[in-house]
Length: 543
Picture 1: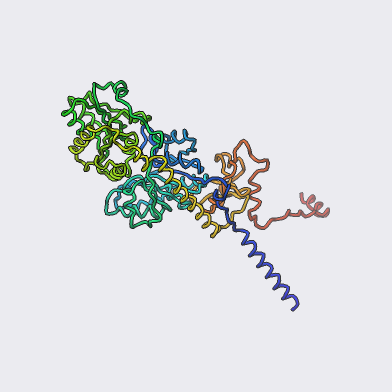
Picture 2: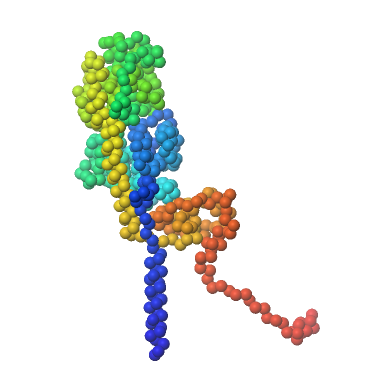
């Protein structure tokens, strides 16, 4: 009888110890970079492309965003390959990483198969290496540019990282276009559009508080340092034009059908028939459509006015090209997200004629140049607007009005609100993690995520990567030593010092790992029986 209460007390003590031990297996991470005086917000920006021959408006926007954010946040730019954008970012002092990944073009051009495409990406693990990249860098916020840039957003969302999705274009009108908006809404915590046209597809599908208007700017012209107007003498010497009075320009990232280069050339040839004082400069790199490029070049070569045209590829010094022109024509046949060329031209005081195509209409209207818009596809309308613009000096463009709407100071004002939203998103993510802490991992063990291949040694609250598989083997490890855990559990630990072959520990790490493993029932040394003298004599007689 007397032993029963003692047994009961012993059992209760055991339960309390077990419960206490269970509590110790959980931990709550502190918010990263949000406390006063702490490290800056870590922002990782993903560019959908990184051209080697030319740079697009979306790339220019991302470069500007990273440059303007970098004084307030720790920025890292991820590009799919080496190119012009990477070099520009590095020139600004921004850290860059190359990580190839694919794009989902069916978001931009809906085909009704987007849900199946999304499922295929997740099942096939096409975003796995991006998850691993995020595991290593552990940003507080992920920013993706362009609607087709879905894989980085998917990878970030799987780890619980807030996603800001920059919409640079207008999604094609289609019966299935709502699927594109719904997919972006699922993976984004904030959707920032460069114009109202770019956000049009999201109105009514995405909550208004989740949408933000953040039009771009140009670093060429800051308030108080706007460029002066130059003559065309420099252009005449540089491009060896015949005698002319006005230089009219066409500017595009590439020779693409949707950018309307052929419309510009048909307009120019009609103007040449009426006036002898005009020359035309086309700045556009080959974009891969050889038939279209050949058609455009042949159109001019077979005309009697071919000496009045010059074709140039990508020009890295566009701030020196705009002052040479009297007028810029943008005959885009697609609904543009914004219209960066139009903005830059007007900031340089140049009359700009454009088709009424998406964001182009929005930019010209805000700049007070709505009278220079032409219905899409109307070549004769381009001709009449150019003639109208040539009759008045280019200085009539209200440059200061353009700068007040889209100048760098106006952009920085909007960026302050944008940065505030980023900080709130990061703070909410930290509080969400704190409210639902994950089970802590045991130190001194090897771990990898359930989707990614990289193996880490958990030591002193950090996950230490191996510099190579060879180092992993030199440490005496085997794949059977590795514990597989969820990606989110692994993500909670910061990355520690890399384990390299030139700095291996004195004690084999494998002993540390295996010491904590259950070894089963240990067997003691087997005692050998001592043979008696009688047994030894008996064995000798038998031999």
